[in-house]
Length: 73
Image (tube, rainbow, N blue to C red; front, top):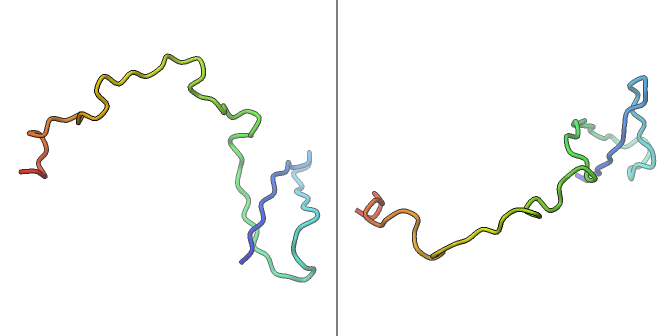
């Protein structure tokens, strides 16, 4: 099964127009319509920019003491 993704907007009267699809005339297709919540131009591409850097005092030490692990007992 081929999949093809298109992002488009509805017209004022709620009509959806799909053009230049990569399928043959008469070919059966399934259409699923999903609401888009994020637009690429609105998405924050650098969410950590301007934030304070993280500091790891001892990144290889376990966060939980070994005595507290039930699996090891």
